[in-house]
Image (cartoon, rainbow, N blue to C red):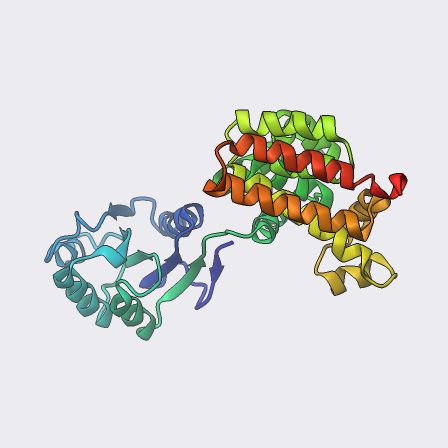
Length: 329
């Protein structure tokens, strides 16, 4: 989630939003614009792409006005500015104009680093907007969304929402807003299930959960639905791998309370409880067999086979059988 790493003055002369998460970048802009318009309802907002900010344009936009109007100038993809325009911006940063807030959106990284360094050198207010590639980051985002509006959601509900919606932060934020608007009291897993049943059933994690529980028919049904609704095969193999690894990690861990195991294994306590229920039919040999099946499926969906769907179906069946290996032993 976006995090201020410098001062928190939304009307600071320069705000630097760094990262590639579009929702967070847009929110960084919206916060500044809202603060400016709260100070002056007639604030002029200019939202510019690199192509629109030509040499000399910034000087025109920031030149003194007879009416001393407040202005917000937003520059998107600042890392793509031309060398001449970068020089204009660097010169401006040395003496920013009053009543004007410059918002630079920069992807980070090496490209355009001189501009990034220049903005930091003058003490720009900085907002981190990193791309959220890890499920744990998206889970933290959902929790923060609920906290931001003063609402309570159980850990299971937050996880179910991430499982159901996927990696799109805009959709996750929209789902949180819908639940908050429609539901009173604490939002739990059952509520999320009622709102997002179809999407939850199409989730890669639903496929994995049903497979590691030994419910082959339900896992295959969820798999076919997932693929039909556009879930990427690599996401499904990733979920299968996470599910089997969690079984293996917990089965080899020392006994203890969920909180202690959570710290040891890097899992939230509620997930410890869920995996404990899922691992009842598993043996160490079954875990090994299942991990090999996942590896083969992963190779199959990444170009090593002719039919990714068949590779996934085969892995699901093998995992479901492995989940019942203790009963057959």
